[in-house]
Image 1: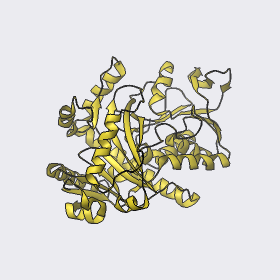
Image 2: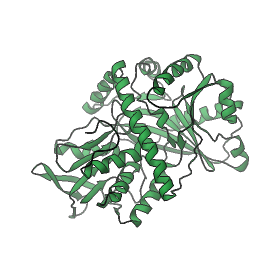
Image 3: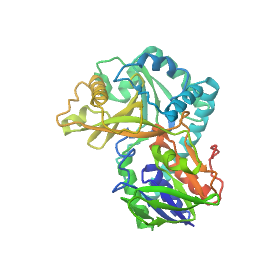
Image 4: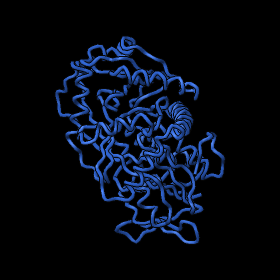
Length: 415
């Protein structure tokens, strides 16, 4: 079949790769000049299958109320006159119920483990390089109560097949020596040794290059005006500033936060809304590299992640529920930098610190939308929230199976 994939982020490119591998003729359309120039450009770098959990949980509600009014809060609400925003917010509150949390966690865990296996297989088969480190992820706490909650949850996750090792504060410092100099005390943490880290931007661009070499066509600088449909199926894609129409037998929407805007005129609604995230990137001198962590870290208190990407250190996180505005808020980036300085006092950035902001396509329960729609040949692969890099390969492979008329290997609840 001829398959048109809309979006050249990490999810769109992995979808294209596995579709081509399944024997389809694939065209990828993206408004940017290269792959991975928006949400996949500068994320936190974690492939966190062992920590694939929804934000929506009972424990987050007291924290949300505590963070209200704080510009540097890990989760910041900017109310808008938007029915979509308020509907999303109400559904998020519903997903915080205990019974919903258990179901959503199980869905995410299964897809995340499958996706990690797909990534490992892809790396072994192709030799793709992306500053990867297979040193696990350490999720640490600076508050004793947070550590106790993390420890309780670790047992539940182990029942889902996820290896989580409890670590004392001293053991955390032994695992990642850079934490030994932290100006805030480490109460303890949970270590997932099978998790990884790497540069999602570099991965996506390299995979796009390899996909192009095997016949995938990339239409960069092409902004989609509309998805055209007739008789309950898509008949083509029209482009802005052109009379051209791109046609195929099947179409995949992997446009992240913009997916619902393009699909709404077709009567295809989805609970996806942008959660703006931030990151900073610090270039490391050889001397600084010795003081920087090499194990990927998650800071429970500030909801940020820290990953080593070669001679750079990336720290990202936080979530801002506002609208589609992507301007960088220096206050939120500075809050991330100050936390990095607290944790690693000897890591003083010498040059300019790079700031970035991107829109994560989030569903209220953090479970992505993968599969078909009311239109017979229109498929979705979107709504991955903060886990796009973690879930990309598994989502792409499962999507390719669905388009090909095969049942995916993973028992995920597809559309």
